[in-house]
Length: 79
Image (tube, rainbow, N blue to C red; front, side, top):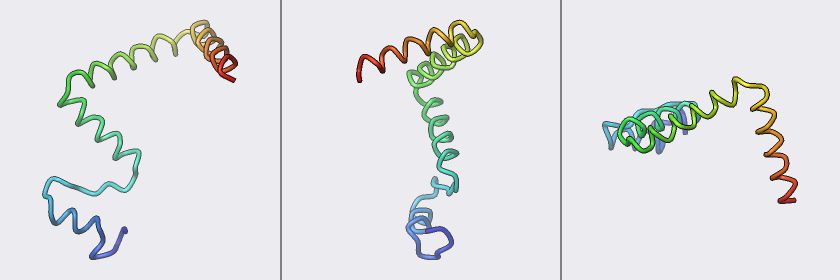
């Protein structure tokens, strides 16, 4: 699709002025999440909570080990 004159990407970009092309899918996803979080406060709050949880768990080796232990126990219970 990249580099072709009449590709789907080109046709979409001609049809809509608010669309732009980004090669890397991860970057596309990040930009999409940022725009959604700016427009919807519930989504922003969710990512703020996830960020806070990761900061608390990630800074303490004891908490990280406890989380790992509980996750492995859940996996063992499922299998």
